Amino acid sequence: MRARSNGPAASEKRANRLYAAGAVLLAILPLAMVLANRSSPAVIGLAALAFLVGRFFEDRRTLAPRLLAPLGTPLGLAALGFLAWCLVSFAWTPFPGAALRLLGEFLPTLIAAYLLTCLAPGRIPAFAPRLAAGAIVLAGLIIAIDLASDLALERALGRRIAAFVHNRPALTLDLVAGPVALVLWRARARGLAFATLAFGALGVLRSISGAAQLGLLAGAGLFALTRLLPMRVGIGLAGIGLGLAVALAPVEGDLLAKLMPEAAHERLVQSSSRARVAIARSFGAAVAADPWRGAGFGTSARFAETPVAGTVAPEMRVLLRVGHPHNSFLQAWAELGLPGALLGALVLMLMLGRVAALKQPDRAAALGLIACAAAIAFVEHNGWAAWWTAGLGAAITWMREAATPHAATIPKMDGPA
Image (cartoon, rainbow, N blue to C red; front, side):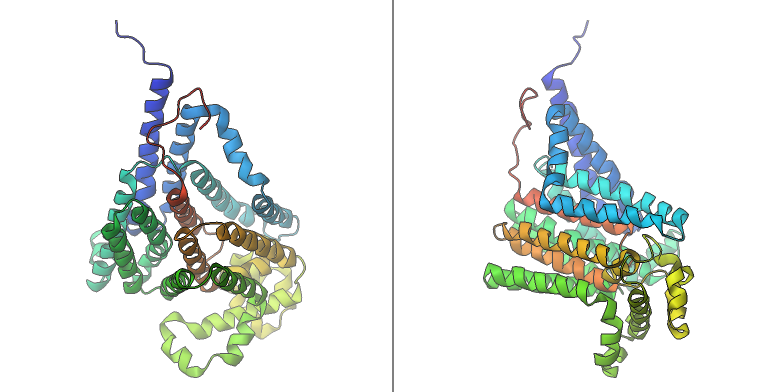
């Protein structure tokens, strides 16, 4: 009779298989987004589940402390405070059902991203960064070739024929290419690291997403400055940029309307810059009408129907129907008011404090990621979008992997992880 496989050895094998499965899912995320641009929440959710169960098999006693410890730090407490205020705003939101549905998409993805960033680093197999590089190279090539061939791939798949279908994949490439390249650089696969950056940039630059291209420029620029200048300069620039993004969001539209020359609008005609300025002015007017608590979490999609919209000048109400203000910082102000903006700013500043403690090149790469994400958030998308949260979770996981010592073997089951 065959002996039953049990004990530490069997648990180690199960954990290793789960880590491999989770790492494959994490690695193929950019390619999955090209093939299905709403897929990242499911991919990240399954990857997080694999690492969660793997860590349970590895050492269940340390699993809860590993997950709870970051929440007790100043950064963790500030983030929980921000989420708590989102929930408090349900007390006055005029659309609790819609807000609950949005929370039902955002919160599970946020939890999955948190689990992944806590549990995957240090347990990602050596093959995974190379697989991720291959996925990024393929994703960049597919975006470039499909757009150059008048969306032949979309036609072959029988899907919607519109160039913007590649915007989300391009934004995902923006987030993950740099962190994956850093992991490869640390593994001395430097040619592959450069290929990852090059083909990631190809997909971004070939796409029609001005937000993705702005993110690439901001991320690469701050990375370069941080590598060339003293640490305090890079951290200071990031702090000033994030602080201004939050503080000036309610008056962004008015400032741009006064300062942006007509020639700039002509050059940005494909990005609908005039409409974006008008939208920002409309939402800014709504913030000015009720700056203290906001309209409530998840109200942007129906903001024109909120009570505060009725207090805005009639000419400003029309563009409140667009669904979101194309600026996540302004969205936080409009939905969560001054408390939400202050809590969000606190989270961002405490995050920079953590980044300042990193060594090079991790610090420069982390600041590049922050600049990229902030630039995108300032001009694009719904801040609670699950696909965006999933992409950020994947990028942070790769950043943490670059800085985490990698165990050659899984620790014994009778000791701490």
